[in-house]
Length: 356
Ligand SMILES: Cc1ncc(COP(=O)(O)O)c(C=O)c1O
Image (cartoon, rainbow, N blue to C red; front, top):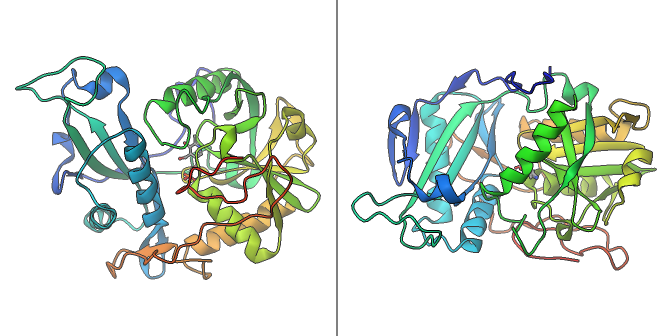
């Protein structure tokens, strides 16, 4: 599946939606272009989201749309991107592109970036003179870490690259530039024959994968690194936390040592693209029995039942596209976790800057 030179495309893209939402209008895919001298290409000035729309018996349903768009707004705020778009407008645009796609399931990619004003070009690092452009594209996307990964798990390594430090690049913003760090982690992993790399934070504690959050199972308890370990506040991570609360599984946010990965009973990644993917080995050390563990399987099963609309979610997690009714998320309560000792954060929210 994963070629050692990394050149083989590892995720299937069966179809791309032929329109793109651009600043309030739909344009053809082929017209969604930027100037090569755009600020974003030189200085990485973009923020984006990745959202999955699932096929359900009631038609396509976007998973946790408002939470994703709220994180998009948060990322824009952190980077002082003063755009005119509201949460409702962005949600409506995403629903509209899914409707226009005619697809039952797809991946939705909003992006906001610093562009180029061709009549008054500005080429310096200072981003303020450059206009902002907002686009939403969509495509059908396969399993991020391989088709078999969801059942069999993946072999991963600990990266020699550290995750970003909180005072250099904020990991809680989903900025394009952060993914230069992710690319270093991913390329190293692929070239060494692994599906993915796990980065440590600048203190040496476990942070996250290049595009996923991580969970450890030890006995009957789940552990996951806190936001202060330079992680993206994952929406799938929050979903796992809330699912665990419903299932009565204890979950704690903890700083985690690298060695704890090797002796965990189970490990798994969470993410929009990766969904819930078991990890069967780290640095060629077998995790537990070397496949998907029972607790991972239980959480995965509930997660997929929810995304298919076959089981009620802990909140309004699905926005059914055909009804055109965005989930009312005003009462959304981010997952709360058991308060542990000093190195845990009491609140897990992608909306807060809660740190331990
Ligand atoms: C670096 C990183 N961490 C974690 C995640 C998981 O976040 P989410 O569950 O919101 O997709 C992603 C995926 O977007 C990511 O790129």
